[in-house]
Amino acid sequence: MAYTSSREEARELLTKVLGVVPRTEIATQQENYIRVKSTSRIMGFVDDTEFYLPEDEPVIHVRAAARLGESDLGVNRRRLEQIRFALQDLGA
Image 1: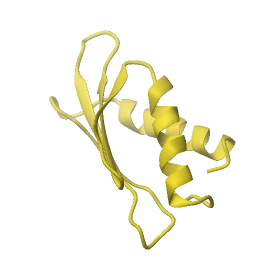
Image 2: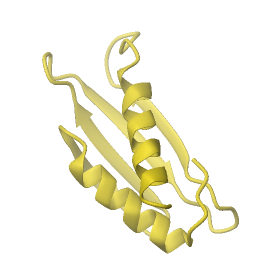
Image 3: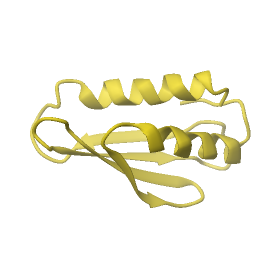
Image 4: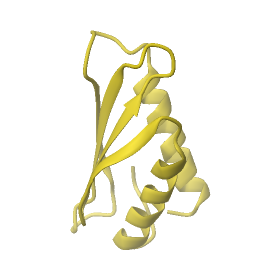
Protein backbone atom coordinates (compact mmCIF):
# COMPACT_ATOMS: atom_id res chain seq x y z
CA MET A 1 0.00 0.00 0.00
CA ALA A 2 1.61 3.23 -1.15
CA TYR A 3 1.25 6.46 0.81
CA THR A 4 2.12 10.09 0.13
CA SER A 5 2.29 11.42 3.70
CA SER A 6 5.24 10.99 6.04
CA ARG A 7 5.99 7.52 7.38
CA GLU A 8 5.02 8.56 10.90
CA GLU A 9 1.70 9.98 9.73
CA ALA A 10 0.95 6.87 7.64
CA ARG A 11 1.72 4.66 10.67
CA GLU A 12 -0.52 6.80 12.89
CA LEU A 13 -3.40 6.68 10.39
CA LEU A 14 -2.95 2.92 9.96
CA THR A 15 -3.14 2.47 13.73
CA LYS A 16 -6.34 4.54 13.88
CA VAL A 17 -7.93 2.58 11.02
CA LEU A 18 -6.99 -0.75 12.59
CA GLY A 19 -8.58 0.43 15.84
CA VAL A 20 -12.01 0.55 14.22
CA VAL A 21 -11.85 -2.65 12.13
CA PRO A 22 -14.42 -5.03 13.65
CA ARG A 23 -13.05 -7.97 15.68
CA THR A 24 -9.45 -6.84 15.14
CA GLU A 25 -6.89 -6.08 17.81
CA ILE A 26 -3.31 -4.91 17.62
CA ALA A 27 -1.06 -7.65 19.01
CA THR A 28 2.37 -6.07 18.39
CA GLN A 29 3.30 -2.51 17.59
CA GLN A 30 6.77 -1.14 16.87
CA GLU A 31 8.10 1.89 15.02
CA ASN A 32 8.09 0.15 11.63
CA TYR A 33 5.93 -2.93 12.24
CA ILE A 34 2.36 -3.70 13.33
CA ARG A 35 0.81 -7.15 13.75
CA VAL A 36 -2.93 -7.57 14.24
CA LYS A 37 -5.18 -10.49 15.06
CA SER A 38 -8.64 -10.63 13.48
CA THR A 39 -11.36 -13.07 14.54
CA SER A 40 -14.10 -14.22 12.20
CA ARG A 41 -17.66 -13.34 13.17
CA ILE A 42 -19.30 -16.75 12.99
CA MET A 43 -16.72 -19.48 13.56
CA GLY A 44 -14.15 -17.53 15.57
CA PHE A 45 -11.23 -18.36 13.26
CA VAL A 46 -8.16 -16.16 13.76
CA ASP A 47 -6.27 -14.42 10.94
CA ASP A 48 -2.91 -12.73 11.40
CA THR A 49 -1.94 -9.62 9.45
CA GLU A 50 1.43 -7.90 9.46
CA PHE A 51 2.22 -4.39 8.28
CA TYR A 52 5.83 -3.31 7.66
CA LEU A 53 6.76 0.32 7.01
CA PRO A 54 10.36 0.49 5.72
CA GLU A 55 12.28 3.72 6.23
CA ASP A 56 13.51 4.01 2.66
CA GLU A 57 10.27 3.79 0.65
CA PRO A 58 6.73 5.24 1.00
CA VAL A 59 4.91 1.92 1.06
CA ILE A 60 3.35 -0.38 3.62
CA HIS A 61 4.15 -4.03 3.00
CA VAL A 62 1.31 -6.33 4.06
CA ARG A 63 1.11 -10.05 4.75
CA ALA A 64 -2.10 -11.76 5.87
CA ALA A 65 -2.77 -15.41 6.61
CA ALA A 66 -5.43 -17.56 8.19
CA ARG A 67 -4.15 -19.68 11.07
CA LEU A 68 -6.34 -22.65 10.16
CA GLY A 69 -7.77 -24.08 6.96
CA GLU A 70 -6.90 -23.83 3.32
CA SER A 71 -9.19 -20.97 2.34
CA ASP A 72 -10.77 -18.00 4.08
CA LEU A 73 -13.13 -17.39 1.13
CA GLY A 74 -11.54 -13.99 0.46
CA VAL A 75 -12.12 -12.51 3.90
CA ASN A 76 -8.50 -11.37 4.37
CA ARG A 77 -8.42 -9.71 0.96
CA ARG A 78 -11.68 -7.83 1.59
CA ARG A 79 -10.46 -6.68 5.01
CA LEU A 80 -7.19 -5.41 3.51
CA GLU A 81 -9.02 -3.62 0.72
CA GLN A 82 -11.20 -1.86 3.31
CA ILE A 83 -8.08 -0.80 5.22
CA ARG A 84 -6.43 0.44 2.02
CA PHE A 85 -9.51 2.45 1.01
CA ALA A 86 -9.78 3.96 4.50
CA LEU A 87 -6.13 5.07 4.37
CA GLN A 88 -6.70 6.63 0.94
CA ASP A 89 -9.80 8.47 2.21
CA LEU A 90 -7.83 9.81 5.16
CA GLY A 91 -5.07 11.10 2.88
CA ALA A 92 -2.26 8.75 3.81
